[in-house]
Image (cartoon, rainbow, N blue to C red; front, side, top):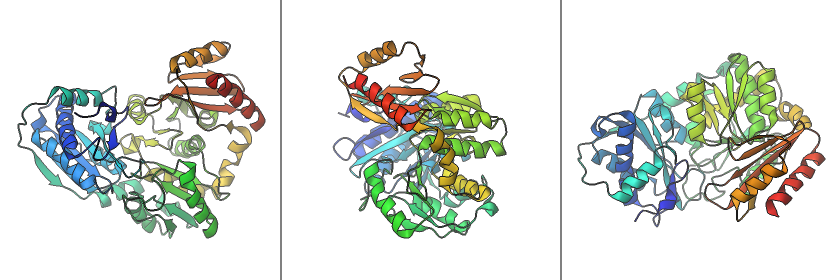
Length: 454
């Protein structure tokens, strides 16, 4: 019996081999091909599906299961081998494939495995659109496999890297002392050659792809995983640190003062840079973000649109609105020129270009934001009745402008917050901002937390 809890909101993920093993992967591969055929309006035997895998020890075995399942339905599998997640998205878009499967557990610990699934145009399947259909097919029994599928092996590294470099003015990027940390994930083979192309010689740490993650965990968004990175940055006296998660579709920055760069502030910086190249463009940001994003986009002559959290929702809205760029607080950044996919490569290149163009450090670019916008960061609280607490918040702040686009957003002129329920745990997630002072932010943060936790 396939555990139902592995079918998440944005992917399929669980522990290996007790929740997901090769046989589970085979069943998922078959069901995915069936669902994809329905979405594409084709027979499964007409499908061309991309496949990639990360560096985890179980990934070759698991990718073999997905490949076998898709081929059992008659599909042609375009297998790119060990690549980063965004490279799979690029493969699907650039090669005009019907979909793609990336065998990865992203930033989860080494005991996890899973798969991210997309349809044509690298549009993600989600719990609302596709993933639950796969679950139901497996639970109800898929039946006999028609067979007849084939596999094509491809090496896309050089093509992908050339496409990434085209999106910046490489001649503008100046050498600077940076630290690059890959968390033993896929960033080194993906981004390393690009640094060489740009004439950079970064200090590197945790740079060898190793699914055992022998030093730090593959999620730099966690403070405990950043300690070693920050200590290395301090010892090496670098101007900028760039760190990636395990499958390298997210990158994070630490400035010269060893301060972590918040995702919404980085979204604002990248949006301003992109709007100089594409005036009047539309930019997406998520409901948790600082008003810095909207203010920056509008000041630069762009259109800022708020969006639900999650890559499936961002990619779909990017396509529907023609937005050129989107950013999430969690470190996902989306680019129309990269098939609306989230990338860990492009933010790194764009930041290096931006710093060179402006002749400033990251800390100097961020100073105006730190002086005006005071954010709490995400704070989780365990609650027994998520819906009841959300109702209490709505009633308590009835005099504010409210939105239920994603959780509940409460907006006053000089402060605002969003509270979202977790999809998988009995948690409420609070993000709050004051435009008055840090003390005012802390006062309002404590006020809202007291309501949530009472």
